[in-house]
Image (cartoon, rainbow, N blue to C red; front, side):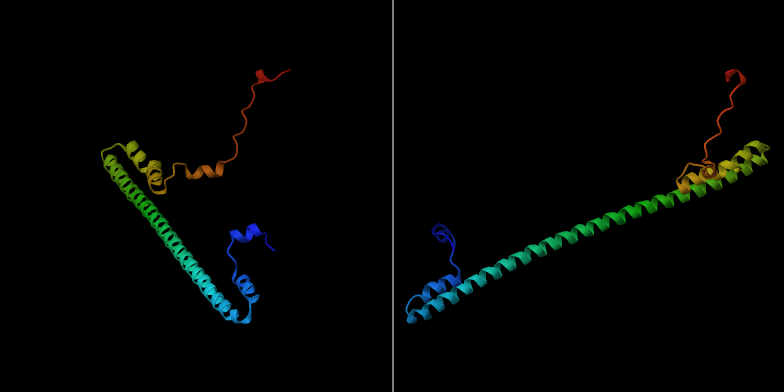
Length: 161
Protein backbone atom coordinates (compact mmCIF):
# COMPACT_ATOMS: atom_id res chain seq x y z
CA UNK A 1 0.00 0.00 0.00
CA UNK A 2 1.11 3.50 -0.63
CA UNK A 3 0.64 6.53 1.55
CA UNK A 4 -1.63 9.36 0.37
CA UNK A 5 1.42 11.59 -0.26
CA UNK A 6 3.04 8.97 -2.50
CA UNK A 7 -0.17 8.38 -4.44
CA UNK A 8 -0.44 12.10 -5.22
CA UNK A 9 3.13 12.32 -6.56
CA UNK A 10 3.14 9.25 -8.81
CA UNK A 11 0.93 8.32 -11.73
CA UNK A 12 -1.51 5.50 -11.14
CA UNK A 13 -0.95 2.31 -13.08
CA UNK A 14 -3.49 0.87 -15.49
CA UNK A 15 -4.41 -1.80 -12.97
CA UNK A 16 -5.12 0.77 -10.28
CA UNK A 17 -7.32 2.71 -12.70
CA UNK A 18 -9.23 -0.46 -13.61
CA UNK A 19 -9.69 -1.32 -9.93
CA UNK A 20 -11.13 2.09 -9.21
CA UNK A 21 -13.53 1.83 -12.17
CA UNK A 22 -14.56 -1.67 -11.15
CA UNK A 23 -16.03 -0.28 -7.95
CA UNK A 24 -18.54 1.69 -10.02
CA UNK A 25 -21.73 0.23 -11.53
CA UNK A 26 -21.32 -2.31 -14.42
CA UNK A 27 -22.32 0.16 -17.13
CA UNK A 28 -19.26 2.19 -16.28
CA UNK A 29 -16.99 -0.86 -16.80
CA UNK A 30 -17.01 -0.35 -20.55
CA UNK A 31 -15.72 3.21 -20.05
CA UNK A 32 -13.08 1.93 -17.63
CA UNK A 33 -11.86 -0.63 -20.14
CA UNK A 34 -11.66 2.01 -22.86
CA UNK A 35 -9.59 4.21 -20.55
CA UNK A 36 -7.46 1.23 -19.66
CA UNK A 37 -6.85 0.50 -23.33
CA UNK A 38 -5.90 4.12 -24.02
CA UNK A 39 -3.49 4.15 -21.08
CA UNK A 40 -1.89 0.91 -22.27
CA UNK A 41 -1.50 2.35 -25.77
CA UNK A 42 0.18 5.46 -24.35
CA UNK A 43 2.53 3.33 -22.22
CA UNK A 44 3.35 1.20 -25.24
CA UNK A 45 4.07 4.30 -27.36
CA UNK A 46 6.35 5.72 -24.63
CA UNK A 47 8.22 2.42 -24.29
CA UNK A 48 8.59 2.10 -28.06
CA UNK A 49 9.94 5.66 -28.29
CA UNK A 50 12.36 4.96 -25.42
CA UNK A 51 13.58 1.79 -27.15
CA UNK A 52 14.06 3.64 -30.46
CA UNK A 53 16.00 6.35 -28.68
CA UNK A 54 18.18 3.75 -26.92
CA UNK A 55 18.77 1.94 -30.22
CA UNK A 56 19.88 5.24 -31.78
CA UNK A 57 22.29 5.85 -28.89
CA UNK A 58 23.64 2.32 -29.23
CA UNK A 59 24.11 2.77 -32.98
CA UNK A 60 25.99 6.05 -32.40
CA UNK A 61 28.22 4.38 -29.81
CA UNK A 62 28.95 1.50 -32.19
CA UNK A 63 29.83 3.94 -35.01
CA UNK A 64 32.15 5.81 -32.66
CA UNK A 65 33.85 2.56 -31.57
CA UNK A 66 34.28 1.52 -35.20
CA UNK A 67 35.83 4.87 -36.07
CA UNK A 68 38.19 4.59 -33.10
CA UNK A 69 39.17 1.06 -34.12
CA UNK A 70 39.81 2.16 -37.72
CA UNK A 71 41.99 5.04 -36.48
CA UNK A 72 43.96 2.66 -34.24
CA UNK A 73 44.51 0.23 -37.11
CA UNK A 74 45.60 3.06 -39.44
CA UNK A 75 48.10 4.33 -36.83
CA UNK A 76 49.48 0.80 -36.38
CA UNK A 77 49.90 0.43 -40.16
CA UNK A 78 51.76 3.77 -40.33
CA UNK A 79 54.11 2.65 -37.52
CA UNK A 80 54.78 -0.64 -39.29
CA UNK A 81 55.44 1.18 -42.59
CA UNK A 82 57.93 3.55 -40.91
CA UNK A 83 59.68 0.62 -39.20
CA UNK A 84 59.92 -1.18 -42.54
CA UNK A 85 61.38 1.89 -44.23
CA UNK A 86 63.91 2.30 -41.42
CA UNK A 87 64.94 -1.36 -41.65
CA UNK A 88 65.24 -1.16 -45.45
CA UNK A 89 67.34 2.04 -45.16
CA UNK A 90 69.68 0.31 -42.71
CA UNK A 91 70.01 -2.66 -45.05
CA UNK A 92 70.93 -0.43 -47.99
CA UNK A 93 73.34 1.66 -45.89
CA UNK A 94 75.04 -1.50 -44.57
CA UNK A 95 75.46 -2.90 -48.08
CA UNK A 96 76.85 0.39 -49.44
CA UNK A 97 79.23 0.67 -46.49
CA UNK A 98 80.49 -2.92 -46.85
CA UNK A 99 80.92 -2.58 -50.62
CA UNK A 100 82.72 0.76 -50.19
CA UNK A 101 85.06 -0.69 -47.58
CA UNK A 102 85.90 -3.67 -49.82
CA UNK A 103 86.57 -1.42 -52.81
CA UNK A 104 88.61 0.92 -50.64
CA UNK A 105 90.67 -1.94 -49.20
CA UNK A 106 91.47 -3.23 -52.70
CA UNK A 107 92.48 0.24 -53.92
CA UNK A 108 94.59 0.96 -50.82
CA UNK A 109 96.13 -2.54 -50.98
CA UNK A 110 97.19 -2.02 -54.60
CA UNK A 111 98.90 1.23 -53.56
CA UNK A 112 101.12 -0.74 -51.21
CA UNK A 113 99.50 0.06 -47.86
CA UNK A 114 98.55 -3.42 -46.78
CA UNK A 115 98.00 -2.55 -43.11
CA UNK A 116 95.31 0.00 -44.06
CA UNK A 117 93.76 -2.50 -46.49
CA UNK A 118 93.69 -5.06 -43.67
CA UNK A 119 91.91 -2.60 -41.39
CA UNK A 120 89.31 -1.84 -44.05
CA UNK A 121 88.74 -5.49 -44.98
CA UNK A 122 89.11 -6.88 -41.44
CA UNK A 123 86.82 -6.76 -38.44
CA UNK A 124 85.48 -3.31 -39.24
CA UNK A 125 84.03 -4.70 -42.49
CA UNK A 126 81.79 -6.92 -40.39
CA UNK A 127 81.22 -4.63 -37.39
CA UNK A 128 79.96 -1.51 -39.17
CA UNK A 129 77.35 -3.18 -41.40
CA UNK A 130 76.07 -5.09 -38.34
CA UNK A 131 75.41 -1.73 -36.67
CA UNK A 132 73.41 -0.52 -39.68
CA UNK A 133 71.57 -3.75 -40.56
CA UNK A 134 70.88 -5.32 -37.15
CA UNK A 135 70.80 -2.01 -35.23
CA UNK A 136 73.02 -3.38 -32.48
CA UNK A 137 76.38 -2.24 -31.29
CA UNK A 138 77.27 -5.18 -29.02
CA UNK A 139 79.67 -7.77 -30.28
CA UNK A 140 78.25 -11.17 -31.12
CA UNK A 141 80.95 -12.97 -29.11
CA UNK A 142 80.28 -11.16 -25.84
CA UNK A 143 77.19 -13.19 -25.03
CA UNK A 144 79.23 -16.30 -24.28
CA UNK A 145 81.45 -14.40 -21.85
CA UNK A 146 78.81 -13.29 -19.39
CA UNK A 147 80.69 -14.74 -16.39
CA UNK A 148 82.34 -12.31 -13.99
CA UNK A 149 86.08 -11.74 -14.44
CA UNK A 150 88.32 -13.54 -11.97
CA UNK A 151 89.36 -11.47 -8.95
CA UNK A 152 92.79 -9.85 -9.18
CA UNK A 153 95.52 -11.69 -7.38
CA UNK A 154 96.69 -10.14 -4.18
CA UNK A 155 100.24 -9.06 -3.96
CA UNK A 156 102.38 -10.63 -1.23
CA UNK A 157 102.72 -7.22 0.42
CA UNK A 158 98.91 -7.00 0.79
CA UNK A 159 98.70 -10.26 2.70
CA UNK A 160 98.70 -9.96 6.43
CA UNK A 161 101.09 -12.04 8.47
